[in-house]
Amino acid sequence: MDSRGAPARLRDTPSWLLNSVAVVAQRLVTEGLGAQGARRYHYSLLAALEEFGPASQADLGRRGGVDRSDVVATVNELSERGFVQRAPDPGDRRRNVVTLTEAGAAHLRHLADVLAGAQDALLAPLAGGEREELVRMLTKVLEHHS
Image 1 (cartoon, rainbow, N blue to C red):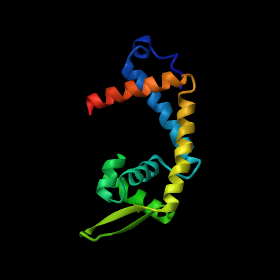
Image 2 (image 1 turned 90 degrees about the vertical axis):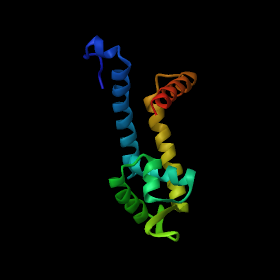
Image 3 (image 1 turned 180 degrees about the vertical axis):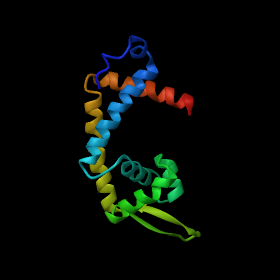
């Protein structure tokens, strides 16, 4: 994205800068994961399962930041590839519990490497300390508004 043609009034605003960088970040992540036959939702749900353990589809969607309408399709895709298992919840047969498989954990590790490459490409102009500071500041802003 070439920002030089944008008016200075825009280029000087943090909100415009954040949005512009987010567009680049989304493109890099989408391209990196897409080359592996994956999407951000795949990574999000696998990461949530790894960190929090088996979960209902509703909880998994909340934890992974995946819209409810997309959770079932995403779990179906991951299940077809052997990355998760879905079974009725013994405590409530009306809902399913999703569990990460060993193949899913291995796939998540691979996608984490791909995602790290996208982060490196995004933050290429920044030194290590600058990257850490950027993450710290963005986290602070996000936590303030959460």
